[in-house]
Image 1 (tube, each protein chain N blue to C red):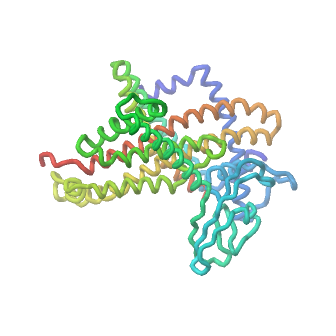
Image 2: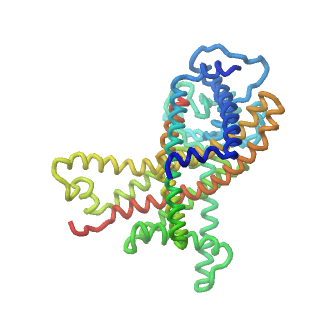
Image 3: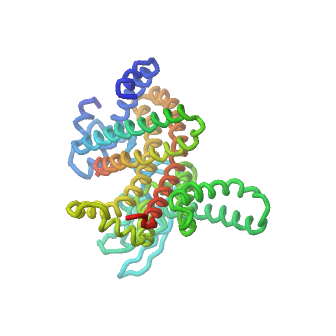
Length: 370
Length: 81
């Protein structure tokens, strides 16, 4: 199967309709990205405002997308920017001079007021006298992590209790759903990657990250509170998970593993420096790619879903008829991408866990016959 | 707002970022197309191995997507900052 077959395939009649739709959506999207220029150009250059009628609010898809994927000190439920309905979350700040301060983020009045020498700028807290402080606030992502943790604890503690109560009986209820997934992680991930001898040690960690990532991905797709927070699409969460994998890999590395990194056996001495350099880079690059893969996949999925919705409003800004006309294909596409994101959420959790298990297995490989 | 004003508004960095993201999409398409094609061929040769083949296809696809989406994430960062 090569290029020629692919290009020949484009000549079917169906691809004509897709090409027209793609061109129209592209054209409308170009409009939306130009509209998204407005909030940034105010900060950077003194460029003239072009074509803005006073008193008319332009739809800014870039701003809408950023508001939905960024972390925030309040959980916005519904309502426009002028009259929002949101849950204010606690702000916990430790300042070296002023000590610990805890207050509700409603004091910031959605970014319009400052309180106690702090104000919110672009979603982050900034101190007005530039003093250094530590921000331990419960933000939207932190609350979403608590929700996912509560779900995991409830499900697994109840399943474990059922196992200890009905020791040798057939699984009932929730056990029927959880047991095959745990067996899948044990057999197809842990045993396959790490081997029979050592896999049991890593099972708690692998099960935890698998279910944590999967449940957070799924919660991120539910638009209603308490779902809809972009947890795994926030670079901090995959960063921490990947660093856990890195630390566990380095801690469990045996002599054979370190010898293969710093003094790879069986190579001529003059290529050894290059190989050592590449191997040391590889120690850190592997968890880094793990982090970027999870982060970018989930973030890209959320952005695509949001942008497909924004298409409707961008077309509606041109003319109400275009808006209504765009709504049906846009909603159909959004539903399709949402279904794809369900698969991607599970797949990314599986790939993260599987690759972590592979790295643990590589750290524990016994010396064969060098 | 005409097409010309739209094109003149976006900065060169943003144009480069979006072109880079598009190239990454081409790379992802070629890679996953290859993976899907070989998976289909192996299923056609040995239909009883379908479960194993499909599972491994998804793993390989996720790895290819990792590289492509790393490029997209970089384009996102450059394009918006």
